[in-house]
Length: 103
Image (cartoon, rainbow, N blue to C red; front, side):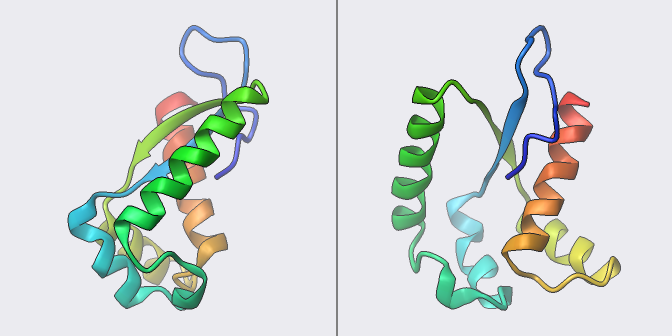
């Protein structure tokens, strides 16, 4: 999750891209994550935490946008680019997706 000075369409403030996973792909993410122990074990736990994070960012005046993530695509991207499938790599992927949408 990075802002990278991205501007939302029609907005003056940067956008923080939040990777938005599908519940049906949560187990795939866990199966491939090298940092699985750092992740919530259920989609419900992740969802609760991410919604709380978005609320906190919003209260701080940071504009968040949900960036739909296909976990299989992210896994392939990490492999193709020599990244481990971990938090920092997932953040790079999400930042690139955010730039593509809001660039």
